[in-house]
Image (tube, rainbow over all chains, first blue to last red; front, side, top):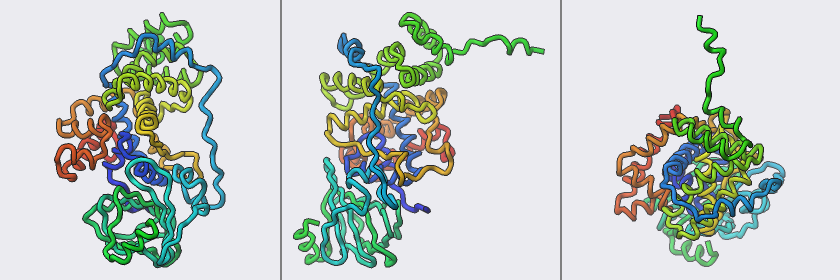
Length: 216
Length: 223
């Protein structure tokens, strides 16, 4: 895998600091599962968090806090490992994405809209929305810009827009200055995970209306 | 020849602590005092204690970790705006979590303070923001491991941690401010720009400059 597009360092720093919202953390952590290079950056930023904790001003706990915690320690119970969902076949959705879907990409309940596009929203709390988008070969979401920021992680297949070509593991970051028309490569369907903190703005009013009707 | 000198047992502070393990609090307190001589040795000691909790369910080591870290975790939570009562409860929860998960601590990958920072961070996201904290799973079938085995592990040796702390402490004020807001004000970089009335690009470049210093202090190859 030759990954070309990585999240910006400040996004990884937000994630390490615990400042990213849930949807943004989900897309970054899914990229991290596929990208050793960005895992290293997050490890470095977490080490900075450790240094900040090590030098944080200590605040005394209430008297009896230690005794109360000691009384709750159990000698036998160890943290049970989270049950692993068995990956069948290709395992295209790495954790943490697989848990949000409840299975691999083939178990997504797609909602079809026009033009070879389907989508499925993922259950996240917080400000941003997370959505899987499936484009049939050569299909694409209409020309749009963004009121806010959009992160797109390519999971299968590939797509191309004015900014470049994206393949599995690549992350694209777009801000309100970017207007683009991502098109799935002709070889096969393209599935992406998209995270937005504001609705898309379509150039065509008809598509914008359709998008509203379909809840896209 | 000075060979005889090297055969004499040399005092080794980083190894002295485990010999006291299980002999009671008095010895532990003594060893703690000795370790104040050197901050790097104190770091090694904290890592060793966390390993002792993970491997041997060592309560004396846990007590010492509690005394060191619980007030710092509470301080961290208070700075993030958690109210006093909630910060107290969460600091206690974090210590319980440390007891339960200590077996997962790998001193080759992170220092005790880094590992404990991630526990406190995740607990706070869960309890205060009521959001999940999605993380990757290295045992996942779709996980892409690193070709170089060392690269996943951010090897933070004790001396390195001292350098890192010094680097974080001596960041230029404008960089320190944005790092502070990331870690202690729960503010993603886009919101930092709004809060400080700065162009987004300025905040990004300050965060990147700060990261470059942090990386350099860790002696990474990309510095």
